[in-house]
Length: 226
Image (cartoon, rainbow, N blue to C red; front, top):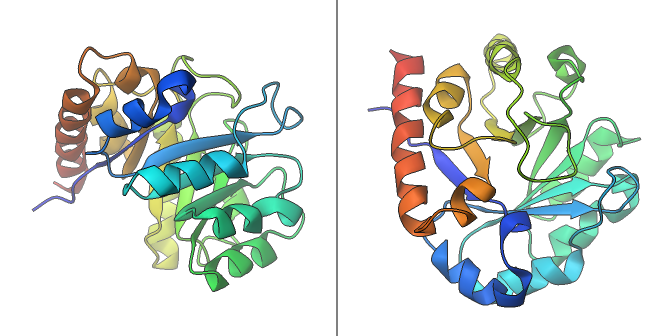
């Protein structure tokens, strides 16, 4: 039986005035994706530690914190202590990536690394055996609602090949432009976890959209494993 795809709705597309309500609508999700942006690494400023604490307090869904900041070496552990279950940091921003990963894992948090669209898979060669998750950006980070970069499919296949070469199996997550229209293809190419913001929160029934995307993604994983 194929593994089940995981869906991680991004609260970047939720209604901040009704966050508790919107979190309830996605209570059937596998993860809640929280985009932390500092206004420097990206051209946007979003959530911080207090949002993570709030989500932890009112939802039982594991929290997937994606740090788009220039100083993850100094700040990653803030989010571990605030209740994050997964913390991913950008390869492009980290100074001492191994240290960040180890410190997060020592806190009992699943730790991962993020690659921007222009960052090659080969840059993971010396860290792939140490991480719990690899997040592949399928858009340039900073804003929701962007279109999926088609070359991401090939990048996912390269990443799975690298993992196989090293005998490891971190979760592979994709973020950006994924919806019910392309999730099967994205999972067939290599994704285990799919971030979906506007695709979920913009749907008439977000809970049903999560189910649909999970089913289609799981079909993609079955295609990949066939």
